[in-house]
Amino acid sequence: MIAANGMTARYLDRKGFPSLRRVLRSPDRWDRIVELATRLGGRLGPAPSAPALEAFLAERRQADPELFPDLSLSVVKLLGSGEYVVEAPGQQADGHFGLAVRDYSHSTAPNRRFPDLITQRLLKAALAGRPPPFSYDELSELARHCTEQEDNAAKVERQVEKSAAALLLASRIGERFEAIVTGASEKGTWVRIFQPPVEGKVVRGFESLDVGDRVRVELAGTNVERGFIDFVRQRGE
Image (cartoon, rainbow, N blue to C red; front, top):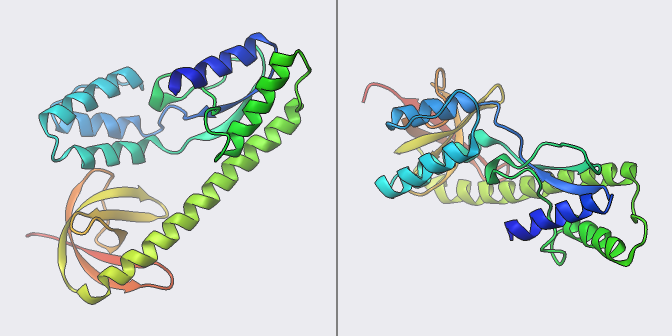
């Protein structure tokens, strides 16, 4: 699939067509990924490197398969989200850091993703010797729209999952859980407990926590309607 998507992107470029690319930029928080790797005996350079990260993760998967999902989750959170952008012929746009490729489109699932359908229409025109069916500006607007709609769909999925998780934990207020920090920003600090694997916000005691930290928390409250799950950090245990 990756090879097909890469070939599609390069083919459109050779034909002089603009193309819709799937981009995951170099992570802004590479320093934190380096810190997590160092903590586990790994070594990553100061500059973001997808091959180096892949090698480290492969080594950790083999060395500690039980804890690897938690490490993988932390890295995924630190890498950030992908987006759709337009690349003009001959342009050197950002590639997909997670896949370690520069030329990458979404073209293999037109039955379930609108960006793939756009790319298929571009391919049909290129193969038939016709001009591109979309202008650069039109593709740019479509790229923005597709990214926004993808984000909106993800928000709805997260809301449903959060409400279901809040309902699951509603009877367990006051219980304590082992957890891993999955998000830390000005918007708040989030953790995922292990049993059951549910994510919630740390409303007290979040100072100095960062993605990948292990912590023990107490369930302080839930709100099923709003999907809120609140934890309080436990210290000195």
